Length: 326
Image 1: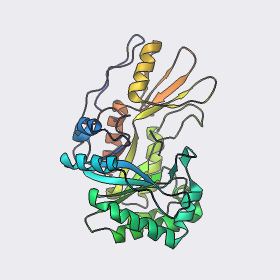
Image 2 (image 1 turned 120 degrees about the horizontal axis):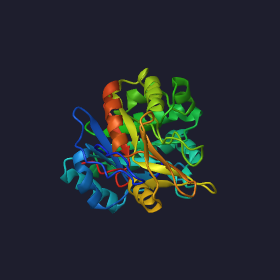
Image 3 (image 1 turned 60 degrees about the vertical axis):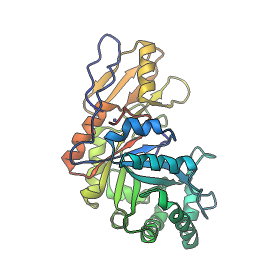
Image 4 (image 1 turned 90 degrees about the vertical axis):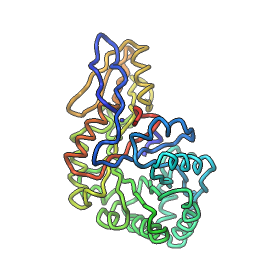
């Protein structure tokens, strides 16, 4: 997941970006997880009406794979604040490395391939569970050979927690069961071990690729078709991007929050174009930089997609970057 929606958006006119979309409540019949990386209570107050679960990022595993960092006071306090609004809260555990600026497959292998390391991490997490209602396992760049270890970790964490606690697992989107397996996801066994499966249907394109949608609707449908051939729809949450990317003529692009996109386009005088096929916005700035982004209008399209497929709900990356969920 990149350490990176709501209501109708008015049409774009005369070189101006559409006004900020109206906010929305939790869609009827759907659950909504909102990931959050900030420790400010203000974001929870602004967004609590549009989510049911607050996933707090989070605690990384050690480089050695032998342990995991403790949750900070700010994380625990954010969970308590979520409880003030009757939100279900989860603590996210990941293999993200600040040193690498990316997810660390080597550290993850050291954890998942060792029963002793898995037990040590599970024991540490169990000590954290009193401030949270569950855990969100966000292990990415999983080696195919580590698939059984990932299943074992989720099973062992689930078994060590009180019955009321939940375990959700994030998986990178793929468009075939074989591709999911190559990414380290043994879908049937993961579904049997976890309570919720969040499929991260974003980052289809980014600065590492040619310009394109962050997560086009057709690509998301293909990912769901493959996933739901194995995993019950009642366990699946559809990932939604609440951000965008830039592709400059020279140099590497970067991610932008929805607010940053709007301010960038306003300063430039560019025109934002809605693309109904992918269900996202795009534009080209005066210096040739291309932008694609997913905002509140995009979110409404994903709500419709979630209902079309009968899945459990949605998971938005992330509060503070996306349009306000309330």
